[in-house]
Image 1: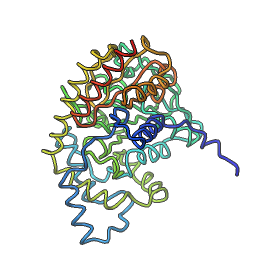
Image 2: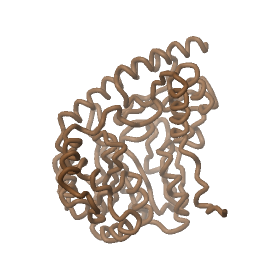
Image 3: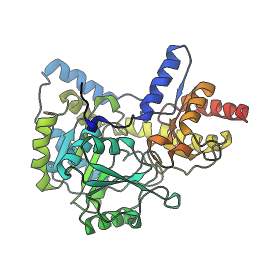
Length: 380
């Protein structure tokens, strides 16, 4: 059967690493998972309880395309409580995870062939979704001296859109208010649509992440319940769009998705009231981060920058390899630790980088670091 060239996208390498780790586990090995950005905790207890009640009392059929009004209102309140932004709930769109948000944003904002800038290293699905939509991802190398975040001088002049993330995947680095404002200003000054991926907001250590909505309202913001709210498999997220884009997004969402999963929206609404449990999860990440920043250099991974947020450490391993894919496979085989090759995040420089996730339990992180140290010592 014939194939569409839009389907000719690269694999998501971390998923291939997960599959290799699964095969090793099926063969009886105990694998420490540092490859995937997935919390080791379930959805908050209050969310699970709300779902149990809803399943007993509600048919859980279609919702409106933009999401449950109560959830949209609660998300809007979150922006007031967390960022001091007075947000109209009518601008909030509930989505089937942040991935649906990217699809909706790219479809609403861009036409075939438009060029959309993405910082490298960056989340690989940005560029693959763009390619599948017949858009042109423009990978912009972020400098190490800028902690692998873009600055206005990096931007080409002919972009239809710019996608940024802070805290970022894979680096965990953040833009402060001035840096984010400078990027928004530079983009808008040349007619470039600005999209802010804020999926790791809430997972911050020494300072709070800044939302693009604190700076300007003429932006798209995409977020999710996957990371801070520990609800990856529930596939529920949200986006905030300018008022005059709401109906555009609504029409596309009606046809692409009908609506987000009703049961997941029920869980999400309840999860927003589970602050104590979520902050306890954050305390685990903070301890894991401390262990990583001590343990990785002790194991020989010395070229790292402390992450400001998220739950990743991105390591320059050019002194150890020029083939991160093979090196990750060697680590999995020799140490029983799954890590992600940097090729997922940076097509140009990723052969010399690795990403380590510390989203799992502290016991797992400590054991993984012990194994990595032993492996690297044996490797010489």
